[in-house]
Length: 293
Ligand code: GUN
Image (cartoon, rainbow, N blue to C red; front, side):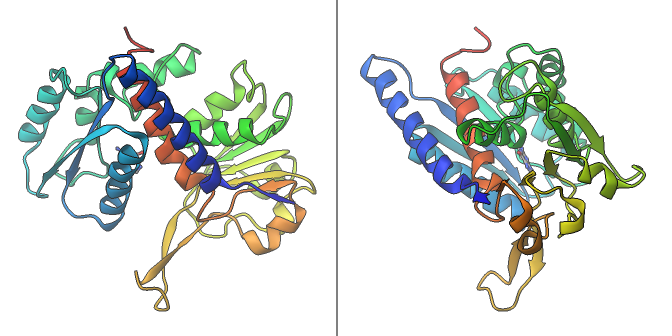
């Protein structure tokens, strides 16, 4: 069994990005600039956004954090989105989700100029992904593809089971795994809450990508000997022994599943660090106008 060290790969890629940024600056180019809008004080969102800002520093990017209280109106938020769409200094930006209930997330997502949508959530980027055109890729699936590539994991013709059908992980993940590319070219099955006999589907899989947000859902008896298991789960479970009061729990029963795997990602330190790196990759592409001229 080989552990997939997302943290180490993420550190390496951030170093590569920082080197490229320095080359760009040396040649008289512009420093990539990411802006992030954070509404309210959700604990998870605070942590994610702080990590995004820190990663920008590590990559040599400019970053701007724009904060609003949870009672901001949808109209005010949409106005800020429009302002960032038109700000030539900002290459890409994100609106951290979830948003307060009185704000329509889909409306906000669609208000973002797709050419600055470094989250890859805008329907134009999602649609372009589904037909294999250059686009901003959703961060978590893109990070997983990068891990599969860097560990030379063979996906061609393999049976891949994606657990979960969310718009930001499950669906784009399935799309990427079936596209004509390396990694890719897999035979993909997407399982969800209405799938009959998920355990049997998983047992057929050469590659399992678990993204359903249910701690320890994938048990050892659901995994074929030699399978590759990618764990996207990051559920916060109360843990009084930790300073934070919680620990992150993956969707895979790691202790019992790992001995059966050829490769497996840990939680934390697997997919998580790669998600932020993907956002950095998209920001670099946005800064270079590489996808949309
Ligand atoms: N909330 C959870 N994950 C994400 C993400 O990748 N981007 C944004 N904007 N919000 C999120």
